[in-house]
Length: 45
Image (tube, rainbow, N blue to C red; front, side):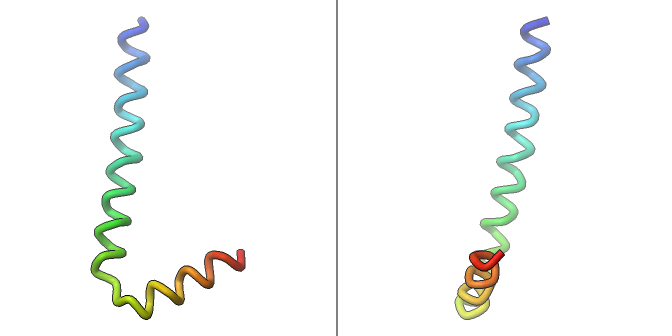
């Protein structure tokens, strides 16, 4: 039972890390000027 819960937690963490990796990869390919614009928009909301 405990092992099943741990496996589920590790799977959830793995999914979150995959999302973070995709976001980082997307940001690396985005031009710098566009990145600055996105940061400003996010700070307002």
